[in-house]
Length: 381
Image (cartoon, rainbow, N blue to C red; front, side, top):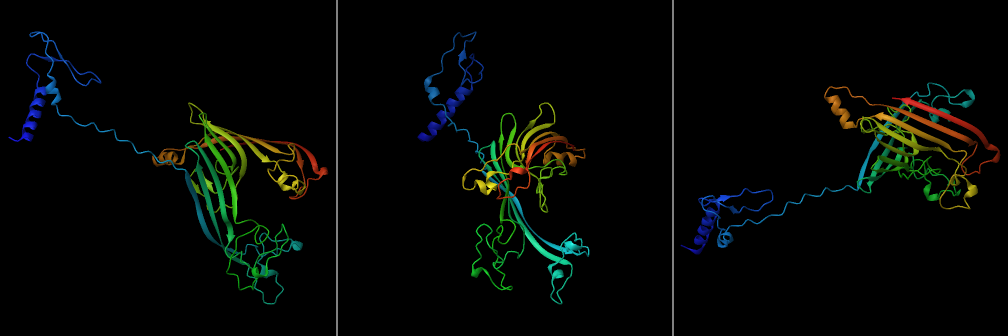
């Protein structure tokens, strides 16, 4: 018999020896965490003998494998939401046949330019056709699992297709510089489009940052601060435009929306299905230093409010029961009634007001007038 066979048989014999108790020997039960049992005294033979150490040395051993390490959940640092929209318009007789000449009353919608032309044979069809686009992005930057920064940015917002050819560029409203001769071409040479610029070829720039705010989940509740969309209920009293929180969708046709500078704290009310929120809003603080030329030479850094008494302050209180979109859909799919409802109350106040102030001008001293205004705005949804 070969040595390997002898070793194997010895191992089997030793295993059989341990697995089969000797006659007349009792073994203690294994307790939690005990590696093995020792023989205890037998009534007929007295104290049992210890097992030989040689036998223990021949016991086969199984290597203990380490506990599999769970895969670490990857933490998302950046999330990008949004949409891109391209649509066409066809307006037929929106002026309802009226002339938009203000001396004769005006029209509800502008007439086509050809309707004002004095050139013989100029067409006046009362029809306007065009197309426009919008890229809306809503990035979220996660500082950690409880802190995040949000933004809403519109790129080429409702820019009409073909509306910014290179030849159609006016003087810079800030410097008065005229466009270079290379930027001017004939009417048919307009295939080269340039970016929209405020005051030169469009009313606003190609990129507009609408909202930027932060969110921190504290042990007591959620804290939000910054410039954010103001939305409530069905969007009748306050409509943020674009994103619909109740249905988790985007309104692609929204061109406007309510925006508020706010610090808000919200949390659930323990033992109930309700949420509570309180917000402090800066409804209006204009004019500020960055809006007047008088302070341009003095301060080039951080702008500030020029007076506290003309500010419009607002406090907002909300108590609501609003299910998240997934929960709401599950309830409806089960054939049950799902209800979202709430109460919102806003309080506004203003002591004084600045009237007739234009951007770039210093506020006239004789236009600081008393208001003593207060507004109470309740809403049930």
